[in-house]
Amino acid sequence: MSSYHEQHLQSLRNKSLFSGDAFIDGQWISKEKQFVVYEPSSTSILGKVSDCDLEDFQTAIKSADQAQHSYYENTTGTQRGALLRRWNDLILENIDDIATILSLENGKTLGEAKGEVAYAASFIAWFAEEATRSYGVTIPSSTPHTTLMTVREPVGVCGIITPWNFPAAMITRKVGPALAAGCSVVIKPPSETPYTCIALAKLAVKAGLPPATIQVCPTKDRQAAAELAKNPLVKKLSFTGSTGVGKKLAELAVGTLKKLSLELGGNAPFIVFDDANLDLAVEGAMFCKFRCSGQTCVCANRLYVQKGAAKAFVEKLVKAVQSLKMGPGLDQSTTQGPLVNKAAVQKVKEHVDDAVSKGAKVEVGGKASMTSGFFFDPTVLSGVTPGMAVSKEETFGPLAPVFEFETEDEVLRLANDTEFGLAGYFFSQDIARAMRVAHKLQVGMVGVNTGKISAAEAPFGGVKESGYGKEGSLYGLEEYQNIKSITIGNQNVGAE
Ligand SMILES: NC(=O)c1ccc[n+]([C@@H]2O[C@H](COP(=O)([O-])OP(=O)(O)OC[C@H]3O[C@@H](n4cnc5c(N)ncnc54)[C@H](O)[C@@H]3O)[C@@H](O)[C@H]2O)c1
Ligand SMILES: O=CCCC(=O)O
Image 1 (tube, rainbow, N blue to C red):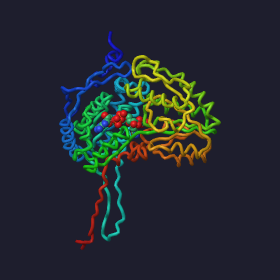
Image 2 (image 1 turned 45 degrees about the vertical axis):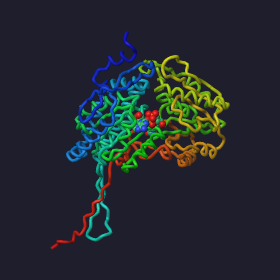
Image 3 (image 1 turned 30 degrees about the horizontal axis):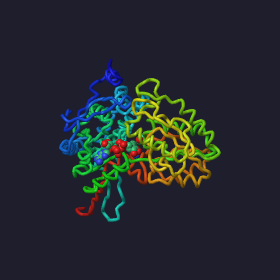
Image 4 (image 1 turned 135 degrees about the vertical axis):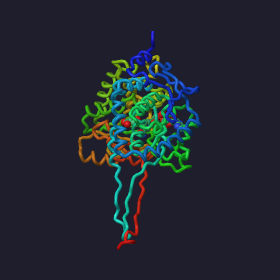
């Protein structure tokens, strides 16, 4: 009998989308050296993928550099937009297959995987439009007989390094604007989830994007991947992942003063004031804590609830959590998939154990009750205090630790007491408080009375050690462009 993942792979409409090949210099390459990718709900081997070495990265970068010049010089923004729109359409036509592949390698539920593929495509569609709106300006010059203007130009080859938690959307949020601007890209997909990226690249080529403008180099070799931060032909590095790795890559990129975007870790506060609509707050918490089994960078990491609302909020949250159903992502009834690997399960367990040993109470969950697969039970802890590890570190798992607070000043101090500054959420029906707290939270993105803040049109990015650079939105394109000023002087010379 075939296994869970074999059955689902057999059901793909377009089986060629599931491939472990690298894509270098316009060629699909199956390397002799390969690394293993696991299916996290069974921990069985999903497949083997080409393991690129330093020479592969150097070849890909050189080829991307050559391709970039002719791509940019021979296309207008309108034409690049049309290519991206075709890519968007192909992704949506193949949404079932891509979502199946994504769920098999990442573990998220089919519903979440389809949602992610649609979200990923929305960045391509958004930047297809932005490609046509790459305006320069004319500037009144202080010198007589002079015209001063600016044009926007592509930075050149972009290195793209992304994490496993959003195998599709983290790629398109970078590659969409890069290709729209006229750049070429060399992608190092996450080694836990490379298959989705490879499938997306196949569709990009089918859409008509010049093959060497997209190069995909899967690898387990971090030294080889670091070439994207070091190589002088790479003019921009766009990285999403942990703060520790982001800092290392930034140090390497200093050698050639590359442009950098760093989308790093978070430790989002989620605040519920006494005057909040508690049903809305629980709905928000369920979404932004348990989506992707708690493995999103904008996940609520610390839930602060004002004393008067704490008991009722915890009761409602526990009830909602008890309705979740863990299981393999592609099973119809599953609402919570597995975590990505054993280390992820271990980190949640460590945070629970640390909090309980310091006095927190397990309201629901608290353990890994499934005997196989990388699962951890969706968990709510009450009585959590600032001395516990959960208040300082990103858990990246299905753990909702509830802290109690008394005043607005107190909770703002606690919420901002972290080196991270990605997202923050709060629930209140007081408009003055909503404005005040939104301004005072030291984060790049705020959700007020909602846990949903991500969209192609919304500027995405953090402050403090959550990184810099904005993705998506009207700001996303300029991250892949240089502004050139052109001064045309002495226009009176030669006049009759
Ligand atoms: N801010 C955001 O937009 C955002 C989005 C998603 C995830 N994240 C963060 O990502 C983290 C989880 O992802 P992860 O565990 O894959 O992070 P990670 O930093 O370990 O890895 C991210 C990527 O970098 C690669 N990498 C690791 N070390 C490298 C090195 N020395 N040289 C070159 N490449 C290297 C990995 O293979 C992977 O592709 C969390 O901290 C999460 O908050 C941030
Ligand atoms: O994990 C981080 C990205 C999630 C999102 O874009 O909402």
